[in-house]
Length: 204
Image (tube, rainbow, N blue to C red; front, side, top):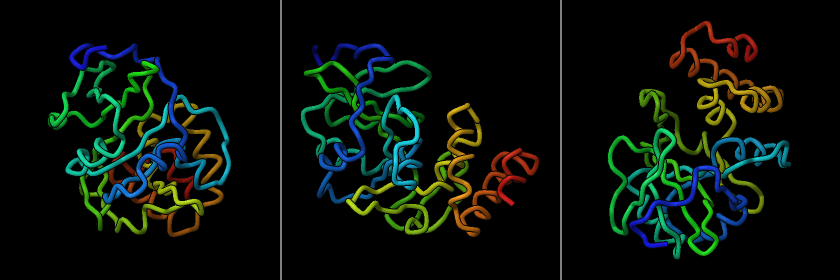
């Protein structure tokens, strides 16, 4: 496949595991973390449901470092159900917040890189940049060295869609969250989606 050609269909996922992507990014030198459903499972320490993809987050200005560290892959901007090639040394355009990483040998997608605001000290919610927290409070690391977004950050993203898998994650992980994390999530959901969101009472 030529780098200028489109990638495979949007269903062509054979995602790496969090451990596999962490191995590839060892020593990358910029902050990143696993997000989405996999981050819930990393917090719980077990796989609780199938995952169709793998999402990691990185500050937009650090994307080039992630791309170099992955090596031997091709990157495609992704938005609104379509993808298009992102030539080498080309930054994702403004308004594009996802880059799908293609394994050209297998012709499958391996990881979805989410481009976010914030920096090494501050985590900032991309959908409502006024919602911030110290990065050290929102990102943790597993005993084997995989960084992941804590549940309060992951669930804030999931609160908008509340798909069945999102509700599954919420119901499973909230009892394991400490009171400060639940309070932070309730306040963030109220700020972003309004005070009557159904998750807020459950977090009390």
